[in-house]
Image (cartoon, rainbow, N blue to C red; front, side, top):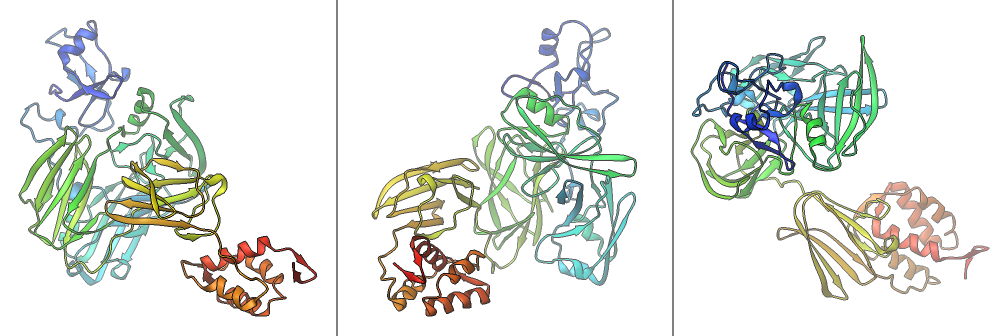
Length: 523
């Protein structure tokens, strides 16, 4: 059996490389079994054995009882072996868990975009799991993006994709076999529902679904939060769904995730295009240039894989875990991927004219009670004068008071900050790069003569903003506006239409709150 060359040991700050010679100095006597969890193969993420040295010098080796036996170090001991050698059809298609309730859940598989000319009119896609067969026709395929197809409510170890009346080149996009659910435990990202791939990175404080056959045998640990949210009897097996998260980066939390073939890290693998202009969708980047610049981050093999193969140049390493690459795009559809033993992140470069816009970056602003605050103009201060902000990317918050910039704050991606002491005559802007992606202006309501019905209606409707569904509370306001027939009819029309301007509703709500109604007269 080949000697392992890529072995790590927990050091207190993460998994760090270690040689067999150094490990022997730390454990001078006897065999150190894989069950000890002391040494991990960096390539496949499984615990390994340190031999006792009775026949030859001590060395690391894989256990015969490992679940996965496809680690490259099992097959080749050459330092020149390219263990980063997966092919175009080895990437995993996304699988999502959906429809979660205390007693149910279901699954979907995502078919990434394919060239329309590869699909004949009578195309059939047959997806087989162990117990079920699902057939879909060409009409079901979305040729502009990813297509999610329902594949039932039963967990499956793998599924096979069979294509009838289609070009064999489709298998370069849709693999023959897709890995499914491991009965010992499979993780899904809570925000998207997507299954976490084998050996993928997971992050501290991020929540994941854990689906397992049987009970999770783990004692309560201070560094983990684990909560059971669903269970479902399927045949003789009881499947349980948990919500899990690591509260801090620690050995305890790292070993918990490693049991489910995921690595807890503070620098997850990422593949990010920075130039030129592009439109990003799920597993797809649309562009119209001959080359692209990308930043690769995280603990990955520092080599971008392309299919079909094209030239790529590493322009600069910003740090040990971050580098800039230029990729020359020769074909209309080109697979770009990064990983360790398996592809962890991948996307297709799709050359075509850009006549679409990309999705807006995620920005969530709420009051201190967690209720989302919409951008625009507001005539009401948030409770306790506090707003909470969280953004998808690094951003800058600009606070303007009385027309003058009072404060600027840098904000890291996925972190949450509070803006306090918010008062009237304040404008808050959130920038990602040079783009203002969110803005609110807090101002006092103008004085209005509420005894003049015409002026009252003009005040309510003079500004336009975001259109919202007509709130149920509008009916209560209408009932007490009978003394103002013009306003009454306008409210009645808004209820009938089912939609209204948000700023108009906010103004009407503020006026109604300040009114004292006595026998139909406002005093």
